[in-house]
Image (cartoon, rainbow, N blue to C red; front, side, top):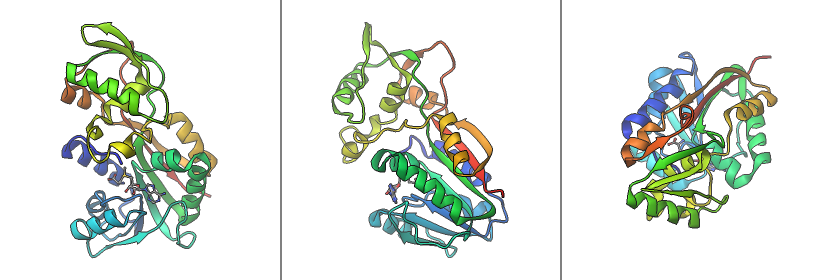
Length: 263
Ligand SMILES: C[S@@+](CC[C@H](N)C(=O)[O-])C[C@H]1O[C@@H](n2cnc3c(N)ncnc32)[C@H](O)[C@@H]1O
């Protein structure tokens, strides 16, 4: 499961998601809610809304109960895409750093079933807001890594399971590698040597090219009303003291997309 760099960066992401919800929403579904970090932002934005948080993890939902629950929120344990709700029962659905896990662990057909299911659960005019990692593309960049990080990159190439990660040594700490491999590496460093490493080494952060992701939502019937990148990767570069040389500006780390159900 992904962790985030700083509470401030995380708060900005959660607020951006909440801002895309209509303030008069009365019932909102938080899919793959984890500990429910977005719940306070949703209740602040849609002041009369009830929030239903769904996750497969009993442990995370339990933490949610002790930390985040308000009188207007509730929790349901479910393995998505199975969702035990009636059609057209929600005004909004949010999915934050969750859908890449559906894609990586359950595959493309589970992802498209999830989109279909969400569409079915939304009433007319309802919306889905997604914030997730994005694939920055295959362009090659040069990065200069401090020695400790260089060792971690070697370790990462040996342990990351979803695909082969390669890099060229250029000397003086510089490496050349694809932007996609670099983004997966730099956003998973936090997990190396921690209990989260095993899970992180078995899933990619970057399966979604934004344009392709938007097409999948359109195919499920959604009308796209917001489509942007979010979170500069430079926050990671600064934190890990990495210098990067690239031919064009580095894409944002996340995608932020809103789709509406309009008949
Ligand atoms: C990276 S965490 C994100 C949590 C939260 N949305 C956030 O941004 O803090 C992904 C969450 O999705 C949940 N999850 C992954 N696959 C799931 C599935 N098939 N059904 C239900 N929950 C799932 C995990 O348990 C985890 O809590």
